[in-house]
Image (cartoon, rainbow, N blue to C red; front, top):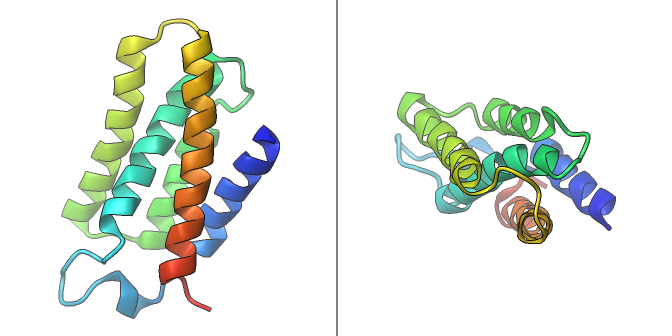
Length: 130
C-alpha cells in the first residue's frame, strides 16, 4: 500500500498538476488552489525528513517531488518563496520533534503519504487540464 500511495502522489504531482494558465493566476492573484498547494508543499517537506529517518530509501524523493511541483507551477518570486517556506516548515517541524524513528513517526509518515496523495488527486481533478 505504501508503494501505491507514493506512486500515486508522485504521478499526480508530476503529471496531474499541469494546470491551465487561466486557472493558475488572474492578474497576479494567487490561484484558487493556493491553500491546498501550500499544504501539499508542507507535507512534502515533512515526508522529506521523516521517510528517510524511518528507513525509507528515499533520500531525495520528496525534495525532488517539490522541485517538480515548482517546475510545473513556475510561481513568481513571492509565491515561490511561500511554497518553499511551507516545504521548509514541514521539514523543520518534524526535525525538531523526531531524532529517531518511533511508532508515532511511522504513523505520521503513513498519514502524510495518504493525505498528500489525496490532496494531489483532488487538486488535479478540480483544477487540472483535461
